[in-house]
Length: 71
Image 1: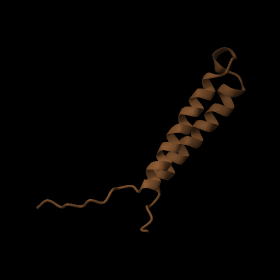
Image 2: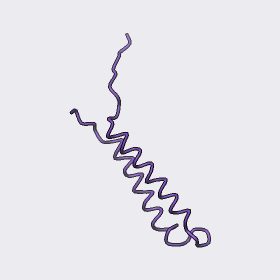
Image 3: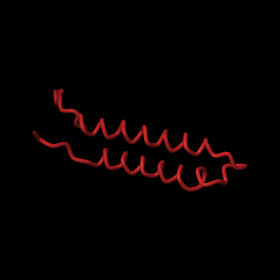
């Protein structure tokens, strides 16, 4: 009674988008670590880094929810 369904849950484009999202998340954390203000209260630590990180998470969610094309 074993079903041999060899379809992958995601397409190659989905995995590529996931890797891009992960790289953007890591870039956001790296940007936050570059802040020279005490406790990270500068522009990089409070504004730019978190915005880049959230953008990476949005790309991750989109990559997971995106339907693979049938071509």
